[in-house]
Length: 206
Image: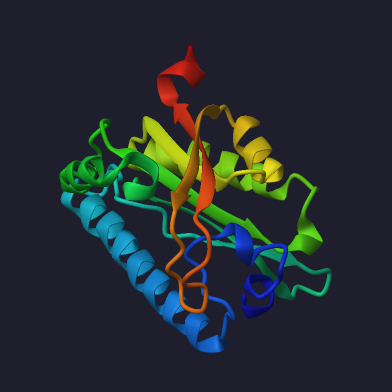
């Protein structure tokens, strides 16, 4: 993870990533993600038991983030991350994000967001396109009742835009000089512009 997020082809496109990216940053991130994943798995188990062991409940996220390459000898190598969370001010604005955060798990009106990155060594192979498709079709729809997703990518990051367009997202706007970077080690830089894309379940199914 430290190697990927220290790569100059990756970190400038991720607004929240510190630079330089150090092992302590990775440790904090892993701890936070593990706690969230454990909570989601607990939601699943408790909901399943509460339904008499006959049906799984909706949950508020996906417990799996990491993308790994499995080598011929069985070794697993971390190559990136793909996560789905409730839409934040970055995707939907501050006031809408507050309302969004208060909605009950499973509410079809929740707006979700996807964040991702991939090791440059694995770019251009369709990996992230497949990962986004899998998290939406195999988890977000059946296990979270997701109907709407907003994503933001740095202006000019054509590869990321194409990943989402291949999964049914539509470019809805470009926000010029929208975001001021506050990540550790990157303070004081110029604001960045963002592409905003949206996926709607009903439009995909039509």
